[in-house]
Image 1 (tube, rainbow over the protein chains, first blue to last red):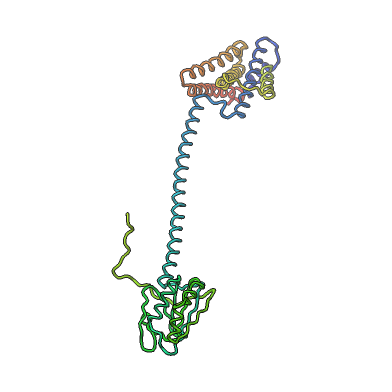
Image 2: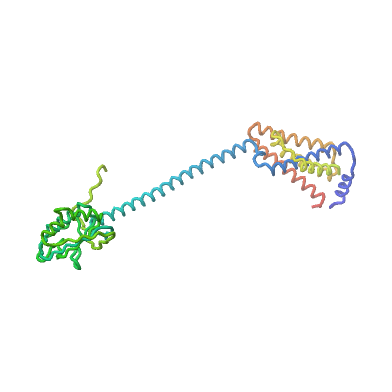
Amino acid sequence: MSRLALGRLAAAARPRATRGQLVAAVLCAALGFGLAVQVRSNQVAGLSTLSQSDLVRILDDVSQRTARLQAEARDLEDTRAAVTGGASGSRAALQEARARTRTLGILAGTVPATGPGIEFTITDPKNHVHADVLLDALEELRDAGAEAVEISSVGGEQVRVVVSTHLVDAAGGIQVDGTLLHSPYHFLVIGDPRTLAAALDIPGGVLDVLHQEGATGMVAQQDSLTITSLRPAPRPQYARPAPASGR
Amino acid sequence: MIAAVGLVLGIVAGLIYEPTVPTWLQPYLPIAVVAALDAVFGGMRALLDGIFDDKVFVVSFVANVVVAALVVYLGDQLGVGAQLSTGVVVVLGIRIFSNAAAIRRHLFSA
C-alpha cells in the first residue's frame, strides 16, 4: 500500500463536520438504506419485483405449459381408457366364451357332467325289452328336462347319450350308437330328480310298459351323480358357421 | 469517515425497518442503487487520487441516480425497459470495475 494513498485515506478518515461531508454522509446513508431494502425485498418477494413485460412472459410460459400438459393428460387418459376397456371387454368375452363352451360341451357330451338326478335300472330277464321301449324311456326323460344322460350295461360299457344317439335291436341286447348293451340297462340322468322320477312313473308310462313286458324298472333319486363317459366332438366336414346376420 | 458511518447506519436502518418498496419505485430502486454504488466507487477513487470534492461527489451521486432512473423510466415508456435496465446495469458495472481497479492500484500498487 502506497504511503501517499495511506495518507489520503487517513486525512479523509479524520472527521470534519463540513456541510459537504454531512451531505455525502446522508447520501451514503440513503444508498445503504436503499441497498438493504432492495436486497431484502428481492429475497422476500419473487414475482412482485418483476416488471410487467417479465410477468406477461412468465404468464405466457405458464399458460402454454398448462395447455401442453393438459393435452398430454388427455392423451394419457384416452390411452388408459382404451387399455382398461379393451382388457375388461376381452376378459368378459373370454368368460362368456368359456361358459358357452361348458354348456355346449355338456349338450354335445364332450365334457363330464355332474349334478342331481336319478339312477334308473331296467332288469329284463326274458329279453322282451326292445329298442323302442328304451327310446320311449329316453324321450320321456328328455321331456322331463334331462340335461345329460348315460346308458350302460351294469358293469359293462357306457354310452353318453346325445342328440344323434340311435338305438337298434341286436342279438342279446340293444346297440346304442353301435355299442352293444345288454340287460340290466343302467341309466344315469342329470336333471330335477323328482320330475324325472315322476315322468317315468306316470300311468301307462315307461314303468307300466316294462311291467307288461315282464321287466322291472328301478328308479333311485340322487342328490349328486357324475357322468364321466365322453364322446369325441364331431368335426363338421361341410358345414361352417354362417356369419351373423346383419353384418 | 462520516460518510462510512452514514452508509452503515443506512444499511442497519433498512434491515431494521424493512419497509415495503412502493410499486412505482420497484423498477427504479435497483438501478438507482447500482448508480449510487458507481458514484461511491468514483468518490473513493477521487479520494485516493487526491482530487475528492464534496460538491462533485454530491452532484455526481444525485445525477447518477436521477439519470439511471430516468433512462429506465424512458425505456419502460418505450417498451424496452427490461433491455435498457440491463444496458444501464452493464455500463455502471463496467464503471464500477474500472473504478475498483484504480482504487486497487492506489491501495496495493498493483
